[in-house]
Amino acid sequence: MAKIERNPPVDADAMDTFLEAVHFALPNDFLDFFKKSDGAQIRTEDYYVILWPIPEIIQLNEDYGVEEYAPGFFLFGSDGGGNAYAIEKATGFIFELPFIAMSKDEAIFKSKNFTDFIGLD
Image (cartoon, rainbow, N blue to C red; front, side, top):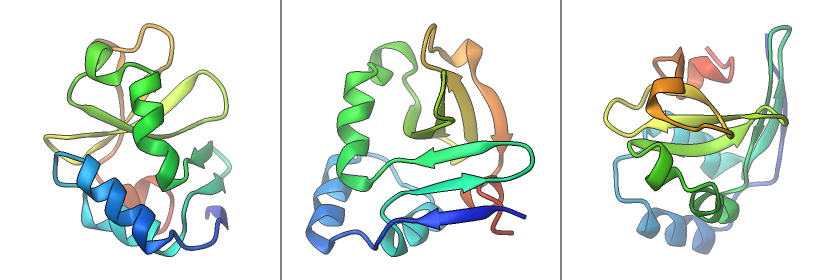
């Protein structure tokens, strides 16, 4: 079972700004989580995940050059080390990508949906 340390809910204006900047359909379970918690830290026996706050996600995708190095993916968090977690835009599936040498070829499938990925099933 996952231990989740949630941030306070996202500000409605920040969520609106975020949704205007995203140009693909985000999975409903992702949106539902972030409406209740503007980021979080999640620990299980197998992994650690930092979910970035909504106001930072767009900028971090730009900073890491996701559109250049791994088009088709959208980063939303990391393992606190060398790996990012991303939604594959076409499927909504969750993948792990290395920050260094980020590419589709290096993507590792993690889950078919956000809820299962963070251990809320």
